[in-house]
Length: 155
Ligand code: 9QG
Image 1 (cartoon, rainbow, N blue to C red):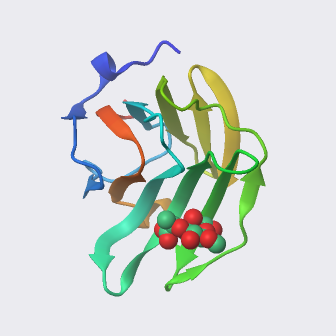
Image 2 (image 1 turned 60 degrees about the horizontal axis):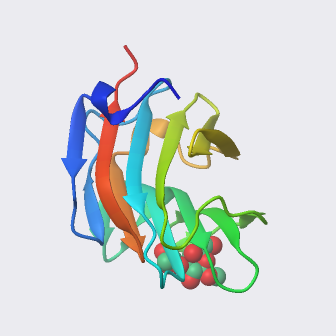
């Protein structure tokens, strides 16, 4: 991809995991979030979440929960959390991450969907369940190391 963290307007370096922080200016169509990291050798799962606020009690709505799972049959599960309830899981029975390996994940924001690419290859689309204008918080948790998170604005 021609977009790299070098293009980012805001960058978060080596955040302590679990990490939660604001998405600068909120999320708009055309914007991109880049996550560069490494999967530890013992990873069972990690997740990237785009949420509406950062409340833990009650738990904030999650617009995109992107869960990479290494145990059993490897997969990526996407879902949304609305009023503390998970919706219907959208599971891709494919996992482009490898334990012990570095990765780059890109979330592209479109009007109707998020598109996620890993290591330069499109992986999945996820239709919005929560209006984009409510999404303002980025989190990463689970067994993962993150080297950089970059936010690339749309203009
Ligand atoms: O397991 O699945 C996604 O549908 C749940 C997990 C939950 C999500 C959810 O327990 O775990 O992945 O944020 C969470 O609670 C994550 C870490 C049916």
